[in-house]
Length: 285
Ligand SMILES: [Zn+2]
Ligand SMILES: [Zn+2]
Image 1 (tube, helix red, strand yellow):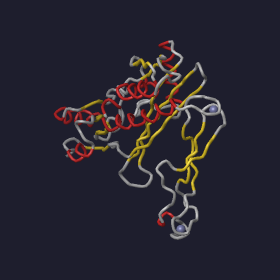
Image 2 (cartoon, protein in one colour):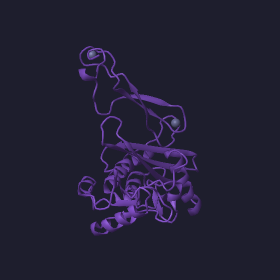
Image 3 (cartoon, rainbow, N blue to C red):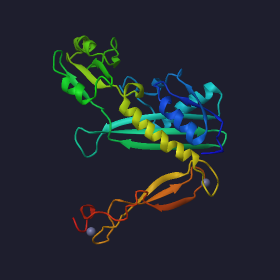
Image 4 (cartoon, rainbow, N blue to C red):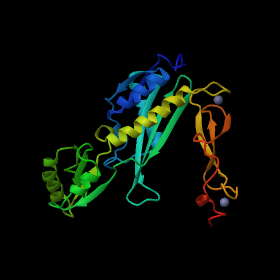
């Protein structure tokens, strides 16, 4: 992207957990931003995955707050931050969904640009165990030790907050024992560590999101020239390939501006124009 409006401008990315390694290259190459990293701000106080601190706002509010903390500290008009969440898969048991959100706050132009993706490629999982119980299945499934784990008492106690970023197999036994001993139910909680720098699967999802994010920031509205043009909604009703009645699948993508009301409809970017019969409630009630 040559001579983009943000080319050479300073921006601050607030991240404690090493996300700069995948976000900065995308924004430098696609938008030309000169991104500085602020890793000093304790973003964990806005919420943690291990629930010692519950997130107060939703993902978007939290990400914007994080970006603004870095902007204030760095006296910078442009801030970037990311926020992730994990939840059980809505349809498939034992699978989880990782959602990643990136926000770009530009106080000079008064725009906030966001990008979000969802991925099933996550090891998000936890088990409650008694000391001495076999955990090898859990460790294999969650890709330990390339992906770290967190050990804590199953019934939270103030004296032991939990041990994070554990990648040493020999440390696990003693830690599980120690945590189980102080828990009122004598069990320990073994969880995957979802912080990006301890979880390569999550880092890959953030990297994918950062690419889409860069393209979106670099796209401008043809009506008002604001940055951040991109998909804002979808229209459902993809016609059945047999009876042509509308299905619940996405028919077209709606592109929109972050500043004005301009919208356009476009065909699905994957080129699919009809729904298979199995998705049709007329052919397949
Ligand atoms: Zn516009
Ligand atoms: Zn049909």
